[in-house]
Amino acid sequence: MESLVRFEGIVEEVLNELVEAGYFKTKSEALRAGILGLGKEYRILDELRGDLAYSHEFDRRIKAGEIGLGTESELRRIIKAKKGKT
Image (cartoon, rainbow, N blue to C red; front, side, top):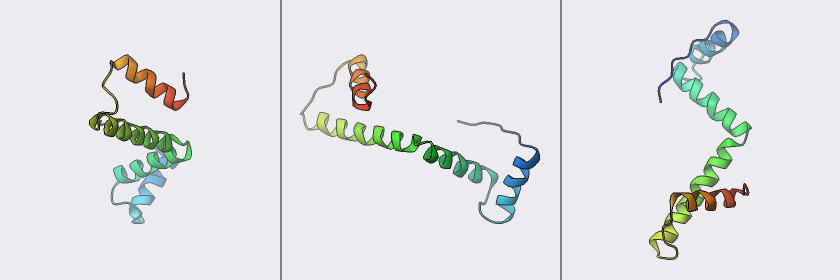
């Protein structure tokens, strides 16, 4: 995904300072780090990592013949149940 973002004021100053001080090579790198930091703070990264781990285990079980493939709606139901969102 590509996005165009414009900053001004204090936000622009902080972003420029992060790059000028050498914390990041580019503004894009600083923004990516900031977004990942927010993901961590709000526990979104934990949820995504859990989903990924679950999908790897699911894939392993399919390949081992322990379970068969179902429909998309069945898969969505299983994932929601795993997340406790039934």
